[in-house]
Length: 276
Picture 1: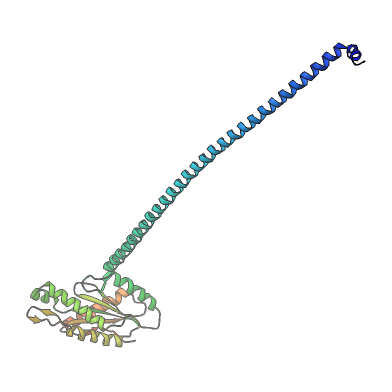
Picture 2: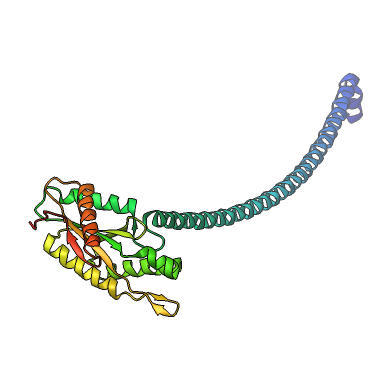
């Protein structure tokens, strides 16, 4: 019966079944091969990505190294610039300090007599004018003195200009030692000086003038082989109501020449001067 069953089967059906089995095996093999191919491609892709990542990492590391080097160079440059700036600032500070001292010295030279240290005429008039205006119209009196070294030309001619200069210096030093800090002395001519006495009446001004006269007479001035006797004539004027500084100085100057005419080495007031 089994043989009959095989002989009775349809040959076409058996052929198709065999074909389908072969196709199935082929497709399975292709799928396996395809899977192997995809896996290899994936491995290759991963390896390539790793290589690219490694190269990128190295590139970034190198870039980082360059950036760090550039940063170090920039910091070094900044440090050098800071040092240069500090050096420049120090140089500028020294230059400013030098200029300030120079300007102060120039002002001092312009404001003071280089020989005696008394105020120069211009500066004496400026300061005295301000003081004069401050007292104008006030109750406090104010006086001026005019002083002149006696026979100064004879001192220069007899002993030389060096001794004459020493006499001028000694005169101013003696006056300063006997004046108040607020009093003002200036050199107004070759051997002529002016003194402003703020808040001072005529009586005190005359006493002050006598002290100055005595101090100058006692001032030591040495010449080769002998001493030099100095004397000074002084004129005194007290400000009148509404009077200008220049007018008061002129009256004191007139009193000075009156002292010269009376024999020198003395103090005189202007004619008609009355103590207030």
